[in-house]
Image 1: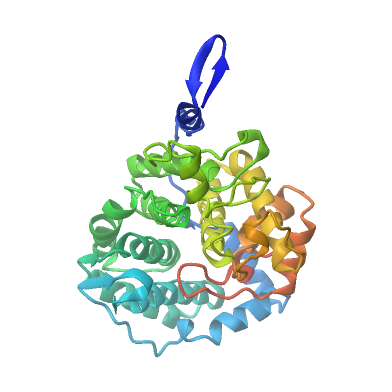
Image 2: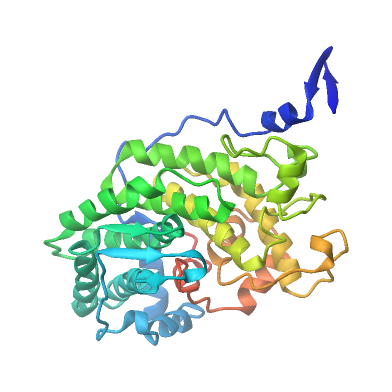
Length: 390
């Protein structure tokens, strides 16, 4: 099939390629990085600490939820491995769950330290990070890139809080070396698999870049993120077909439809994995919001650029998660629900700070508070981001 443009014949494949995100604005790593500055800033942490210590809701119940979990236990024993092997559908699972949960625990304990001022939580967080930085060498098998992204998203959140708010961490340099040598080379490459892979990998990359104060990898992560988000969430302004990322190989309409889980009708807020299931879509949406939150803290606010897509996607999926009837044109009339605890950061950014009316997202978010953890890379976001204006 050909279309005409100014007297030229252009193939449908070429037209699809033209929708690829190729010319993104120049990335701009901060002249000086803000610390702590991965997902939560000091100002945000101070807001949370004040709310918890005054017993205000929903922060107190979210804090109690975190403290009642095994992630914040002072008796936790880390389980590091030199080689973490993660196959498809967690088969085999040699250290994969242990690594993710230890990373979440380090972050949970770091939050507990900041809120309580009890140094036992800081030293336990450090003990977990030190155990892994002394041991891990690599990730292997087919899910290695995704595993590296998930664990690599939580580690720098914990490390930022500890390094910049606690008095002493002798092995922080070794932990930085671990992030630079084991995690960053994997995640910074990105992925042409389902979009939640690359988005999680970029969340890890931006957090690691902040902790390492690595401007080059920061700019690379931002560029990949700017290419991936428009290819993950559709807006009608994109045209009749979704955008694609450079190098994806999606050079025909048939390939695009298959990549979008055989969905051929596109509407505002539809995501590349909507028709797969809401759980994986939630991973992608969470990583988008988390990434944008970190760049905002670093003085490079990407919400104005990606905010409409994020807002539309949150509202679209929240509506069906709340029980709206599924039309026949959408995923064959059947959806696999289960969005997960992933809406707080995006809702806070787009509603609390920017004032957008988001009724479905608000109803879903508030009805499910306190949001806990998905045991992968999303943790305690009601505690850190509910109605947080900072």
